Length: 191
Image 1: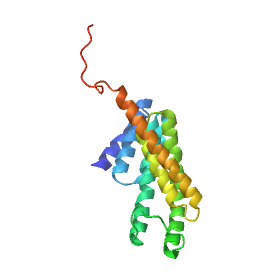
Image 2: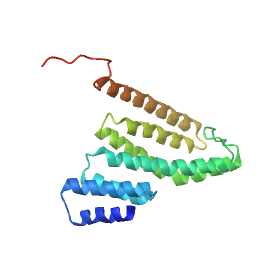
Image 3: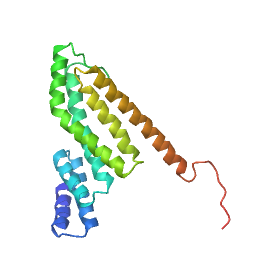
Image 4: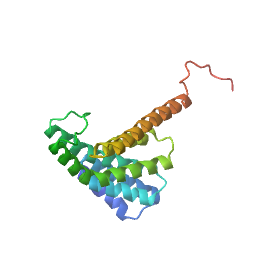
């Protein structure tokens, strides 16, 4: 079914439609590929949507989420193979852990940087994009985890991640306070 939907979206793109239809079709294809776990294809179409409408923060956010997913899963698998708990720090004196960290750094560093850049772009375009802030926190935690031998860099990345947690929470709170009905019961105002 997803492949048929992708074909239909691609047909729309091939017709050279209006900008909004192009963006929606590219995002539709990207979303389907994302759900199929074809991350490279999903990023290709999210980038296409961003090229068509560079002021839309959603494609940048989506690329950041994909990059985090692509980093997180292999990191958790490597930790499981080493018998490590998810929140346990790598021991740079342990030869196996150091080797696993170095391999992950080579594999994940480009994705981590792309994810950070994409999420920052999403936040630049939508300063109250709390979901992008939350993923930026997660990306900095990924970055910290591959700082194999540099404890100072690791601590700085974790500090940055914590700052993004704080920004996320304060942004969510500010948004909630702006929502109607969040201040309890209100009486209708006369017109």
